[in-house]
Amino acid sequence: MTVTKEINTWIISPKPNPKAEIRFFCFPYAGGGTSIFRDWVNSLPTNLELCHVQLPGHDSRIKEKPFSHLTPLIETMVSGLLPYLDRPFVFYGHSMGALLCFETARQLRKLHNLQPEHLFVSGSRAPQRPSFLKPTHHLPDNLFINEINRRYKAIPNEILNNQEIMELFLPILKADFSIIETYEYIPDLPLDCPISAFGGLQDEMVNIEDIAAWQEQTSGKFILRMIEGEHFFINHKKQELLTVISEKIRENSKI
Image (cartoon, rainbow, N blue to C red; front, side, top):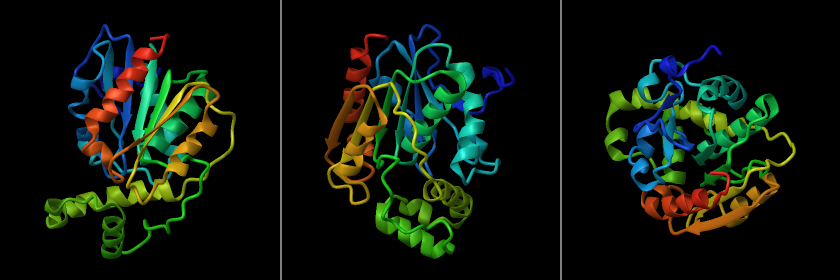
């Protein structure tokens, strides 16, 4: 195997747990990094090891060119995950991260006969549901920023008002939105693993029908949970989300 844990830049484990019975992989949303999940380890079962998926162009990989299309990203990323899949594992992703972990699960099944024990997704319409939003990644910087802020209200003022940070951040954010906006769903057999899908009750970008449609992507158990909040409800309803995730992990008899 060409990628080893020692040289692997794809995975960061904030609290390594050699005795872990399961690994929990977190995939970031567009423009996000590993800091999103920094303290999650304190609220999850102690028998797991938390693994942050670190994308090129993000965090300590900021000097690397970010991917702007999903297929080559998934094909490259899978090789970075494989050394960590020597025990049961689960995936979690929010928004773009949900799409990443779903397509990674399909790629692992196709090429390596591996699947997560559970797929947790939030803030994302099911992949087979077309988006009604107009593409933004091709827009001039100022129009792109205005549109993203109008939709998601997600870029903090301290970043918006810092020209140096914005010059670093914008290409990454645009590349991430290109991944989302150029994605083309290819029908395939449902995954065998359970899927738990979470949505924000006040999310204007993703509605309950979009979230419920994730049921079509599993032949196993499906759980739908709507949580108070807008698109980024995971930031202020984190404990509620992690409580449900922890319960589902403990319920899984394989773990």
